[in-house]
Image 1 (cartoon, rainbow, N blue to C red):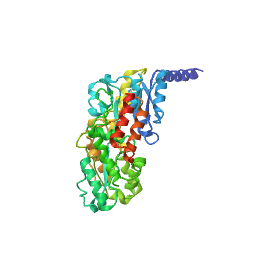
Image 2 (spheres, helix red, strand yellow):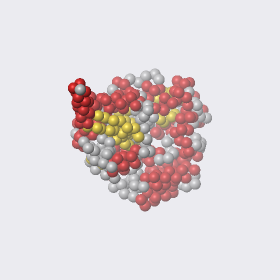
Image 3 (cartoon, helix red, strand yellow):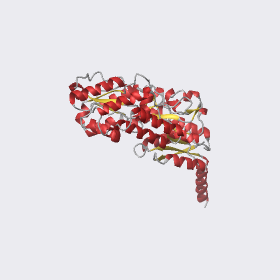
Image 4 (cartoon, helix red, strand yellow):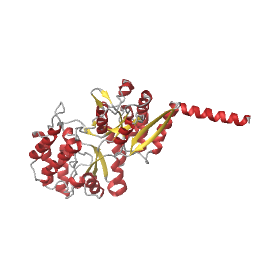
Length: 411
């Protein structure tokens, strides 16, 4: 009897200890099942540093994260930290669903690239700690380069010389030189990479119909009309580019390093002919559009200090580096981790070259996502008008004017 009482007391003691632990949950976007082990490692490592905490990881599909988060905040049961992108953070902040995170302290904030941190800073308040991203690079087929009379050891360094090289490849070999990212919202990013604004400084007026904007779009419309860009570029975009490159029928592939792995899997011969150069800068600008993920703290968390500590832990130098090594194709938004030898060594194969070249782009990387009210309506108007310009049913000026009118009616 005494033994049973002692056992019962011991079990009750364990239950009480477990109940006293703070329960923290963090949500990510579409990382399962590939990165289950790494996310569980993060949870366990945080628990070891904070013995009175139990951490649970939950993965959520990208198309459900916003609704699920708003519902959790409204119910008073938000996660401690949540993975969001730039567009989501602005929308959540506007709806009062996020806590400002400046309280993590300036030493922590200083670890991130300034351009990355600025992405999630609204009116001087930080609403997300930068996490992972993947800058673009250019994979190029050395065989097609040689046949076109181009030097494989000297790939284009600017957008202007890339376009010239693409024309030369088509003229000399009959193969396409490149598939530019002009479908969907591509020009919204290309404008900014060229140093051209989308909105007025106060954000109340669309300004992407200036002569400079028209000239940039016209350049690609002319390339399309003259047969330098594949016909299905507007319809299939990057998918078409990847297929053409994998088949050995495209000189240059503008891509994230992760897609070089696809080339390796699809066509080993083309992969063996592939080298990787930097994403070419537009001479008018000094930034490269790079979508960025962050960890944010929702409004109404039970323990704000611990929640911020968890978000900072997930995105710190050591854990960003570890995550990059697991994914092999994402990069840290912290300065120290990005300088690690893992990214700097390069190598003979295209995957290693891609890692080196992408790491060199990080200081110029910036998430150029345009945040506007009625985004789906405005983006559709932009996309439809760009397609009309490329198809030749509208002049470039008329297309941009019409899109600006729709935008300004909402702004």
